[in-house]
Length: 414
Picture 1 (cartoon, rainbow, N blue to C red):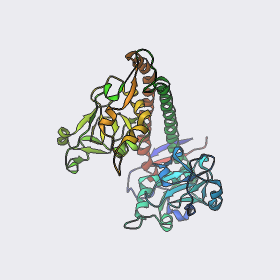
Picture 2: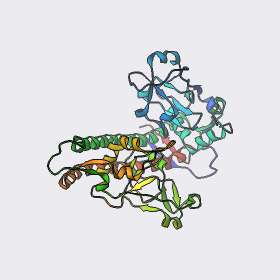
Picture 3: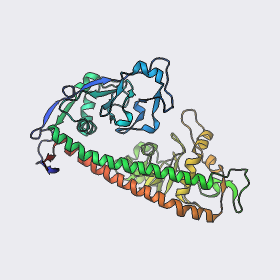
Picture 4: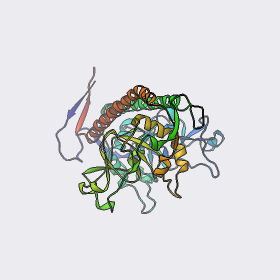
């Protein structure tokens, strides 16, 4: 079993007893990926061969749901540029310093030329190396070795020169086991939430998807518009916004905060505005629902924290239906909403498009019965999401302390 001990705090850069500081080139062999042959393109067929791109990274994991695939015939020409289970991958161009550890599902996947894999590990555990590179220590090393003024890149020699601090293998494995336990629990909860949301969407389609505008409707059902069931307004911004941004104050919801999570609920908001900007914006409360209308339009989110919203968001001061129904409605009609949007660079979703969008409206008792069924599903999603936030925070607090040796993990024989 293992125990965790706090070591006395000293110089943050001093090496704990028994630890080693060396270059990544002494611990592994970085190998590059491969660009697709000229004229070839990726396909969506999952019977073909997966291809890992930088756009497939979700933080420091690979989003397997959005993977594209190399045709099997094309794969033959790049088949030596693959990743295997437990390979550690680093992005070296574009968004530099994204880290992933390859699991069994991605074994034998092809790798873009914008990443390198770390193979032939010596005296270093793959999971420990993965966590070190995701830590502030690892990311600082990556930043120091990145070159280029316009097109930044982490060259192979830069990867080899990264300074890695590590204890002996038994302690490395114990550190990695602690952090992996957190990540495994987080992954399990995220998978549960994905299943719960898919279930909610299926229930919504069964209740409301079988009737369309122009169909013969059951007694008590009618045709109307979204504007008939809720009030629609846009957020607002104090101007110029740069004068109001702050490290503290009221949260300031950006589209990027919403795209950073697949969860229906928003917990993490990076920016704030000064209190004096409040009179020129809109403050929404926990439990309110908002809908993006620019950049990435038609994306609904339910707030788990209070936040101000700018005019890239629609909000709903009053509604005759539940937020859960609205969330699922917005998800179901999003492709049609985006098609009706305008804009040459970004699609903009005007409030009138949403307000006038035609829907079938059931009687009130149908909404009541639907909410009885669907609210417990969303409540479970929220509970899981809250637990994910707590686990993530604890893991992120432990990570730098474990990687610096401030907290030591000792192995004992049973």
